[in-house]
Image (tube, rainbow, N blue to C red; front, side, top):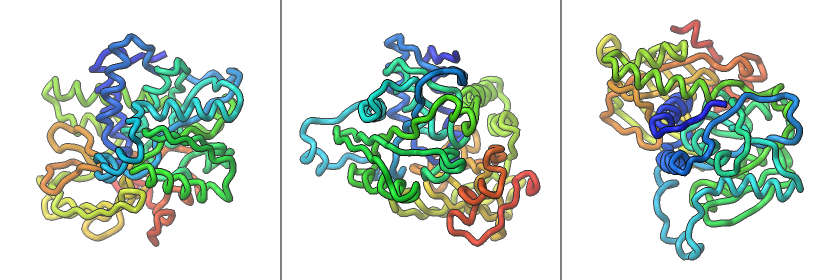
Length: 369
């Protein structure tokens, strides 16, 4: 088992998680404080490899919703509707609600994605429930929709899904017309809960998990976060260290000169980066739906999902969330190759540029850089 035993371990892990989020997944400020609390209380905080012979069911759990800034703002109307206050760990409660519906205790948990909020929240939930957390996830990065995960990609059942928000509202979705419809309904529930809602879903056996998950990603996040910190401490370039640790590429450096977005149940919009240094005279435009998914270099299609596009601070390499990325920021852009499970016609169908509404052919990042 890999354990997080210090606050620095938590920081390193969350830094790595943020990098693999492609600027989506939200800022894990709340999850950081929860994990600090878990460590301080002496809980077992960490993850283990999958034991394919393990009995029972493993579920995934996540927060669903938009990462737009207002999703994390205080809402006076919520105080009137829920005078009883807030629940600190709704994701934990969603897992318990799913157990009640299934009528059995779950054997363990696996993350649905690598994302700032969800990557931290899943570790916190496992620690407080005393459950096994698997070293892996169902996307290898952050994703905006249930229909971009490997359970959907490989036709595994995703329902039932238990929902619990921070106000204590609880629901179970037993069936849906399609996974796309389940995603739509989940987003409406998140909007009704003022931005986000905790979900527990996809109960599978260990054998089923082994067929569709991406192993080792939590350990990968911890190693990536540590490499960036070590580069800073040793006076090396942390941006290059982040790229090298991921077997990735430095795609661009410059300043964010334009940004526009809207909250559609997701945070959707574009930002434009004006090049500096070796990239002077060039412009990179990036479209995001929670995460970065499509880019254009000097007006021509460039890196797209399922390959990963991550914007970080140009000096410290601290990964930046699209929630708070601002005009004037000095940034670097790092790209890394898609996960093998998405390197197929079906993988491109669920997370390529056409899935997001762009009439573009996918070009592998390794042929562009």
